[in-house]
Image (tube, rainbow, N blue to C red):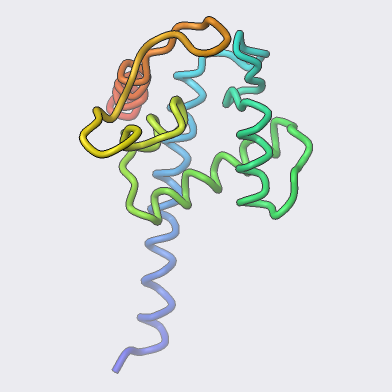
Amino acid sequence: MVHVAEAAQTPIVEVVSLTTRASKVADAIRFAEGRCTQGQSGEYGCYQYLPSTWRAYSMVIAGEVLLQTEQNEHKITMGMISKWLNEGMSERGIFLMWNQGSATGWGPGTKDCYSGTNKWGVYYDSCAYAEKGLNYLATH
């Protein structure tokens, strides 16, 4: 038999742990992005959302497309990171998801991170991005 007090305490510990992890991952993403302005590929804000990603993530977390303010960015970012952590995604997977849109690569037998030039002519290196995020977590 589970006592009410025990049942009430367990989720609180898990929520605090999840919130702390999500917050640290969000800080690492902000650090890895390195700016709170418009990027060369059309991304915007402190978490460098592409307009299509902002619309999609906003719908998942808020059920509507919110105005992209700093407060809303943080709310949506924390919501997505918490969702992924709840689903069992690793921090490395979250960094890859954030940078390249996939945590596991693009098909069976493919590598999990990529580098190259995107359709806007901007160089990217998702492997280095993930390492930058993990290094931030290890030192903060």
